[in-house]
Image 1 (tube, rainbow, N blue to C red):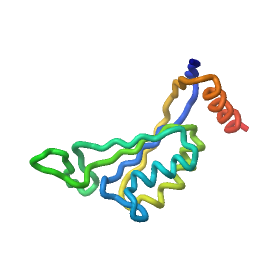
Image 2: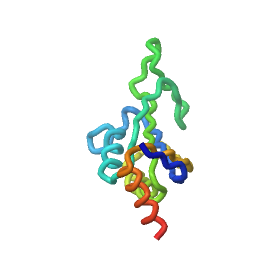
Image 3: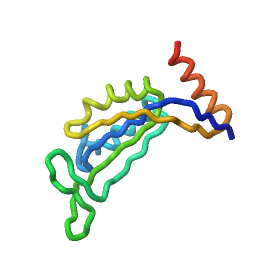
Length: 127
C-alpha cells in the first residue's frame, strides 16, 4: 500500500429530500449515477434521521413523528476541476436543495496503480 498525503481536493455535499425525484427516479440515485458516469472518485449517500430545511419543516425518523421525506446528503470528493464539472451537471437536476463545496486534503491509500492514476490527474490539471 502507498499513501499520498498532499493532494488538494474538493468535497461536494448535496442536501436534498428523500422524496425528490428526477425523471421518475429518486434524485439521490440519479445524482450518484451521474457522478459514476463522470468518473468521480466516489460518492456516498447519507440518510438523515432528523433535520429541517429552508421551509423549517422538521423531518424525523422518530416513530411518533414518522416523516416520509427524510434529509439526504450526497458526498463526493475529487480533484477540483472534476467537482466543478459535477456541479454543472447536477445543478439542473435539483429543484429544491443546496450544494456546498469545501477544500479537503486527501490521504490517498491504495495500490501503486491507483496512486499513479491520481498523480496523472494532478499533472493533467496543472497543464
